[in-house]
Amino acid sequence: MIRKAIISDVGAIHTLLQYYSKKGELLARPLSKLYDHIRDFWVFEDLEQKKVVGCCALQFCWEDLAEIRSLAVAPESTGQGIGSILTQRCIQEAVYFKIHDLFTLTYLPDFFKRFDFSIIDKNDLPIKIWADCIGCVSFPNCDEIAMLKKL
Image (cartoon, rainbow, N blue to C red; front, side, top):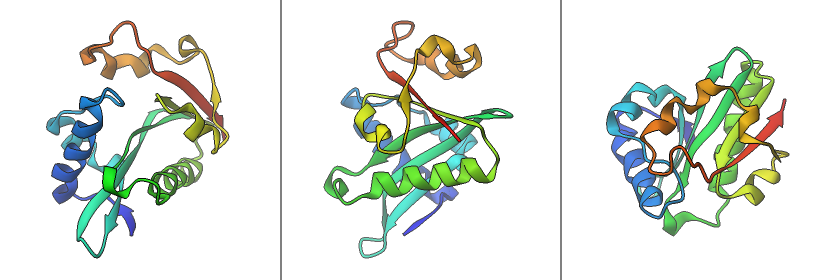
């Protein structure tokens, strides 16, 4: 079941993000930032297990620009379309808010190409989006791939 995240989901979201962060596949987010941005998140809850097995956030950057970020699915739940469902829901939300440009920074460009994202030069993104990157171990030599979808 997909739903908006609630405060009690922060621990599960943090665990998912930490798992992939340790593998170097996405940027870790501290608990404080997750609490600050919980309204950005969608979660996929496995009703049988009664636990969150996927998450994805839509963060607004400007009046016509938003980012899909923190997409993660529990390893035991991959391959079931959960990441696609979460991504599609964030795209739908961006359309609802009349966002024109939706971007992501990813190590999995083929996944996002399925949703009509195209690879772009990171330098084409506004400087404002790099605020969260300062704490990254790869900063300033970001090795993620920037992708954009026009809505």
